[in-house]
Amino acid sequence: MDMAEPSAAVRQWLARAWSAATRVALLAGGEDAPPVANRPVLARVDDPVALDRLRRLTTTGTFAGDVCRCPGDLTIALYGEDGALLGAATVHGDRLSWERGRFGDDLVLADPVRLELYFSELGIRGTARALLGWMISALDLDEGEIQFRPAGDVAAMAANRVPAALSAQLLNLSGPAAGDAAEDTVDRLFDRLRRSVPDHAVAARALLGWLGSTTWPGEALSGDGLLARRLLARLDPAVVVGQFPTLVEAPEVMGALVFAAFADDDVALLAGLRPAIVGILAPIR
Image (tube, rainbow, N blue to C red; front, side):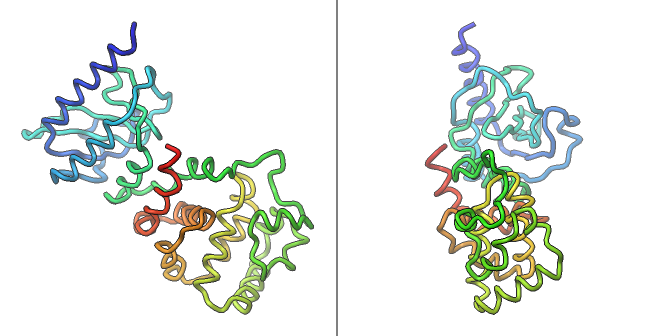
């Protein structure tokens, strides 16, 4: 069958459904979740301007001719004026699956980054983790054959942006050894950093740049990245997050995104990062 036929049918249905929609509910769970009426509502949208913004973000793109194999973890449900369910889509990264059982044709979104950030604006948690994969690719942080910084490798220290104040102490430790350092060792490293960089805002930016320069997944999760997060945890969170709106360097922005991804609630943390994230990711989408 010519794939233009089913995609045209989906577009016609989308136009009718959105023209009749007066409310949208964002629901927990995907294709494998209970019926929409039995699921937690994470956010509601009923303002006409907000509805139009969501419509554009969720209907602009090209159809794939197939469906993602994963069930998705978020559902967008459209409701009419009488409260009746008009239809729904599940979110699959850069794809939306509108009425999968009926159409079986995912929409590859034109701007999935702004859609994820809009979910965060609506108070839905998890956007930071959802964006990590795209940032890792954009900044070429996928690890190669060498997963971790070797001990004694000055070039690797520079590539990871290890703060100069800590270079002498960390040079002879590999990435995993640094990440696994004892708490009293981390305390001493933090004291040294604080003496060398008394301005905590400057120290926070240095640690974020270090965290955002480590390769994934090994070094970022278990090596230098882990140590950077342990040091950041010793700073006042308000000082760290206070830097987010001023960040422009890609490694610092990435470090802030990782910091947010490991927080219990990333919604408030991402508020100051949105323009910088769009600046890095939107051009490549």
